Image (cartoon, rainbow, N blue to C red; front, side):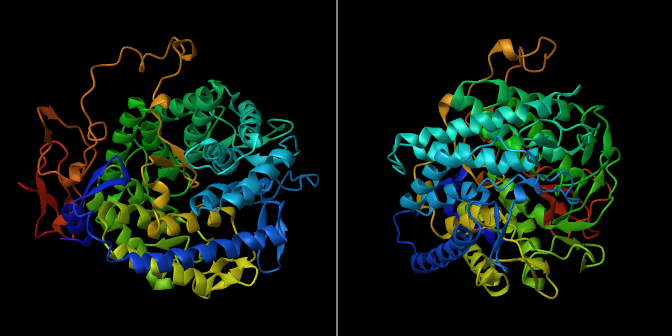
Length: 575
């Protein structure tokens, strides 16, 4: 039995979110308290080394260049590989400060949090000639502002005292309104690029990614709930529904599409770059807003991933039309997947895939952007590590779900690697090549927003006590509120959308019953048959397994599958 599974069965019952676990032996003192205190302080020092250097050498520009102790106005450059249409008039939007506010709150630095809110309230404007990536600006800036507003106005946090704290919501609303022209397409799918001052530029590219269309609902939905203005949520929902309608008969989505024609451009897909946060957002939209529609999307999408992308403990890319493997590769962005699996209770599978990512981290000392599974080597041109958070994120979720101290050791190894290879006098530098540890002059804002945050929460989760948050794909916490579990007014639902009207009677789900099927000995709760996405059986004829653990448990019969001597799943046995 794996470490994660053994501890999951003996210590906790997982309910909805991992930080709401109920420990059976909670009355006993934590034997790892000293280690956690030491490591949380170590991560705290990491955060402030990066944050203080940003404030000293780069603020109010967007991001820090730690090697030269200068700055980059990167919001208009994010994802823009050719650096076209850049405006010399854009001087930054204090991106790293916006991204750091929720981290400051979690670290308990009320003074610095309030100072940041005050500066943004008095100085920030989005009336700037800057062509930005809609997806990146949404998850980083809009998400950062909305989350910080919620934290600032939460009376239990007492993070700010001034009346100016509501200005963050005004700024978020202004930004959200500047997003809306991007959705004015024949399909409702948004352009990938928008000029904050002038809207969609002439001859703008019509290509975008699945993540770019399908990862807007949390931030824009929260903005609508806070302001009472349904336009933001409506635009994001319309795009998400259109995207889902474009799925193949296998319930797979491609990677790149055209927003005007609604046609796919790139048919290869996986759980990595270009698609990753789609899966994350449909599940978290269900948690945050109580939308059963999102839950059904996630179920079908998750089953398809397990069926067509999973190969033992790895996940490869496949053609959305046929399910046939296209690229056998591990990418650093895929490392978010175990954390997502924890949220649906598939802890055993999460533990298995997490170990594979950590194995590659150990091999190089950091996680390369792309690792070729079929050749067991790093990709020749994508050897970099830009301080990404995904492995730290999944480590945090798995520790919350299992309380297995092994994950504390993983976190410590990650912290030590970051300090050894990426820490410089002027902050933390990205790594250009993990085989040589050559550095690159860039400290991405997500290092402070996510990497440091998840590592800190791994060792000090006091911020989450008696709280129920969903973290966005950029690590910004949004509270799960009963008042948000409402649908859009009927007037805003087009008459030709029948899928969300007169819905069929709902089956109870593991999520709605607040039960993790991974910890149950059967799928019956009272007299209700539970519907679950946990341990989806792999029906592919060509699926190979290395152990029984690779085969999982059928979601309907709750029987564990066996791995045959020939290496195929298919035999059954009871728990």
